[in-house]
Amino acid sequence: MYKNCAFTGHRVLDSRFDINLLDRVILNLIKSGARNFYCGMAMGFDIEAAEIVLKYKKNYPVRLCACIPCEEQSKYYSSDDKRRYENILCAADEKIVFFPEYVEGCMQERDRFLVDNCDVLLCYLRKKKGGTFYTVNYAKKQDKKIIEL
Image (cartoon, rainbow, N blue to C red; front, side, top):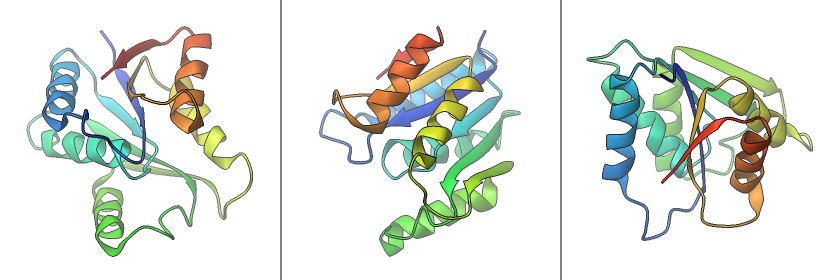
């Protein structure tokens, strides 16, 4: 049983991304005992996963922790994306902000926190570079269970 789950995935989701599969995997994790979900709050995979967790909060005892690398994370998001981001922050059970403003390494610090606080990492990894690749490799080094969609 995995009590704590974290998400990592690409900001731009390609045509292979299946939102219904993500929904089913999250629901199966919840039904298997997952209670705490850690989200890095990046656009794309993170936001999709967070919205699914919030949907299930109505019927299951789950918590969402928004892990924000810096206060200005959503600075360059579109107005629709900012609205989604703010809605998630309002509904999250906990909000952790790592730095008041962007500094080099703040994303990696957030990513290590996600891994360090999870039993299982749910990821969508299609590129062998970038933040998701870094996070999945860190999780492997920490011997974390990884579910790759």
